Image (tube, rainbow, N blue to C red; front, side, top):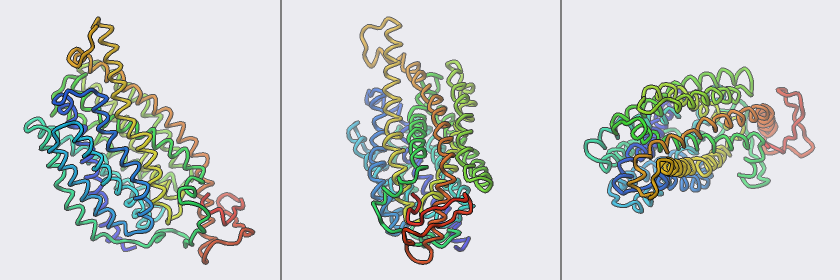
Length: 467
């Protein structure tokens, strides 16, 4: 693959991913204004985030399959245009129901991004460079989030939340056009071994989930997305309520904590993942496990900082979130190494379905429900007998603060998931490589043919593929 064409495609994919996360995070930036204007509970505020992620998760599966069969750049161009138009439509909503429905549509458009983009990167860059390339693509996540807080907070303070959605939608049109000029590589073009065609012995999803390593990786995706979307939905409200900041200053702090901290996490994580991946097949998963172990005490220490001390909260939280971002560089590239090229779109869609259906959709609403619960408990402890929206308002900060302790606890569980995956990934990677070598001559070998895997010193049935 020509380096300039691959670099251009990666730059476009980075820009698309930046707008992907800019548009989805802008709701978290202005959520506190919306809650007060429409007198919403934290559960209802979280449900707006859940609306997006539910559609994103469900629609992602068929779109992932399309990414394995149709032109991926076309899928991306259409998806970017749709979600940008509906982001603009969010700005004209005048009720909770209207905004809920529109956010469903935004999720429909954005579901096209990750499967198609990840599949493209897998065919543009060889395995030894994939973690770094995927880390560049995933830089769109923290930069998009940072820009949403940087731009959205001051605009919302000066002009209200409606205009924020209009501005968030504008760059999407440029990205949609640019997507049409990307190269569309042949599937499997970047593999070290020639790639044959798998015998379709079952559904694409069944083949993907017959890979043992996919199970702990999928569980980790759900847990990690729970944390990240809970933080995204309620970080700015926590800074405003518990640390008494206005919306603009809360946006600046959230930009650093949740956005900019991801840049070193992804860049250094990508470099470290590629370096460790060359030394050991389990290196990427081990790296991710260690960074989650580091993130757990850091996020706990941030929550232990007293009220009205935003700096005391922001410093350890930024370090903890940076460590959590390493997960993306290490895990996305590992999935590419576990799954044959013709199934990568499906594999990423299945992974993202679990991430968003079981993680991203639950994170905001469960965190909101926990926040309401702790706020009511604090009000009851203070002697408040009549629970209303007005009587709960002074306790919303302490309620949300108490709910956020879920984050360090789940980081410990995530470390365990990554250690489990590190035990199975080496064998699964070797079996895929053996299958690709065996089938490169044209179709699957007969069932009696075995392939000796030099990496493991074992024999692997050629017809099992990546399973």
